[in-house]
Image (cartoon, rainbow, N blue to C red):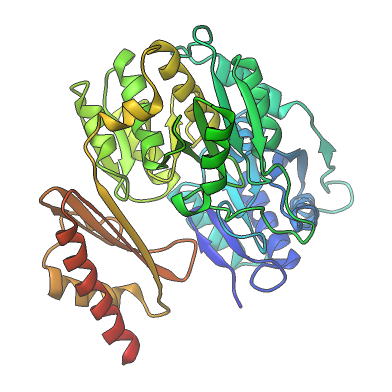
Length: 448
């Protein structure tokens, strides 16, 4: 089995498609790309984390880099530390929303952004060529660095739109045993929000206490906890703490797309301007921008793609429909701390409102997501789908179609060997029709 390589880095099932040898090899190639000097390394809570961290450190040191070990921290914390003066880049050891048997390296430039296209191409060239290793006088030296989470929180507290005073609030935090386990409660304390934490630890067998991805299906426990605690809001995280999903005061699972829409709505109210989301993000984001007379732009899926579109459009706020909010004035990466700060600030600036009433003020859309295994080349599927659906409205990332009342997006995943079908509409008939055509096309190709 081979690891999956994408713009986000390398990932696979530990011991099978991702080994310590893979991790060391990629880290050494990244070290050559970054240049000798300090590289920050952080990880999530996976059982394989210490082993991968050791391999990454060895790979970096072998080419003259000095690993700066942050310990268990959210991915945005690694991104912020990578931006510090003198730091050459960063590696976040996490497989994000994948189950516990997976692990990955997310490679971060000194600008705090996941590797851009030119650097990804250079990295691949280094991987396929012989590398010169450091001698005993040049080999890197590791060191541990504490306080990264606290520095991250101080950054969130400095956001110009943040509201730290006002109505008392209570939140329930579902950290799914992941990297937000210390970060999220600490931020709530600094914001003066009373909080309860659920799912604080991984199981003894190395699995997450719930399905790692914060979807509607995985957040029933958080829903119950919010109602039992009589809380104002529930926050759900993925294992590396860059994404956030919401549960309202009645225990209703709002989901991830509302997180980004809420942030766009709140921030544009005081800082109007363009916003950016990816092609698979709900029209809620579009509605939120339009509410303030602002334009919404779309990018291909992937954090770095959103960031580059934000740079192109001069946008400060944006993100992805998976609950990843980006405030580019703070740093150019998805950050659950920013998302939490938006929600808390919204509630304090609207004392007569609630998360539920805010969500109800928006149109109701049906979102349908399905992923199907696919080992053929996506180009084969693309050709057949163009025959069925006609020319696409956007081809930067698979095929994206505008529909009356919504949209449809079909793309090859960069993190799994699957093709993703995502559609949203106010009329389910459009979604049903498009999915029937898509699934029949997939079946015909797989049967050949």
